[in-house]
Length: 246
Image 1 (cartoon, rainbow, N blue to C red):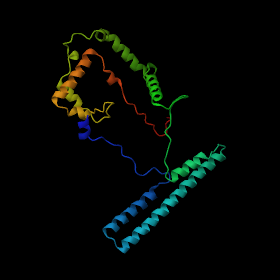
Image 2: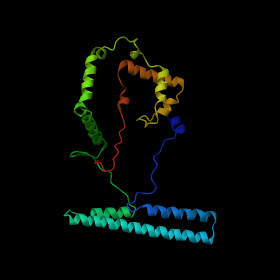
Image 3: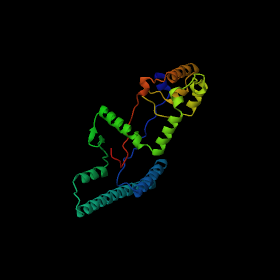
Image 4: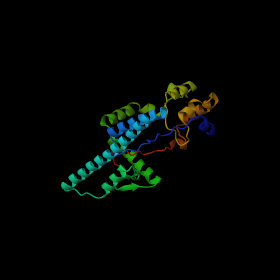
């Protein structure tokens, strides 16, 4: 694994350098773009004329940003006034949140994972809630009636085969070959590795000797029908979608 970490670069998430601002608009983008062009021209040809053009563009950016912030605040206050006139309660929290957003402070507390009235703050509680959620989603009540009927029909018509897979020399029971394994790996694209940090790229580039060892392990699992305990572990990263309840 040490050699793999040295040879295979780890992908990194690109962070947005500019925080999302509620006041940022197309006019701000155009003014900043024009200032950047003036700055590039000034660096290439530092003349008094180009310097003056850059200063004018800089003043235009300041004016445009201030105007955008003012318009954003006015629109927000108008929306709060409309809510108050409609009899809705308006607290001070939205105002302070908007002020922080306009000033560029985008800190947001990570919401707790919550299902119904049960909230989880630690890793074990989150794992238990996710397990209950996935178990409820995969119940027969959430599967289409046509799918369940097809499943029952298939199981009833192939009950003999499911109970007795037959002799070991039939095609379905034969061990996998190295050609089949390489063909399967060739169709795999980049994917997040598991807990062992072994990616498809690492397995694809194994020499034949090491590939044969992996193939032997897979064939043993296939023949015995028992998965290693380590293969039953997974890393689940919940991602909060915007506009959805956590």
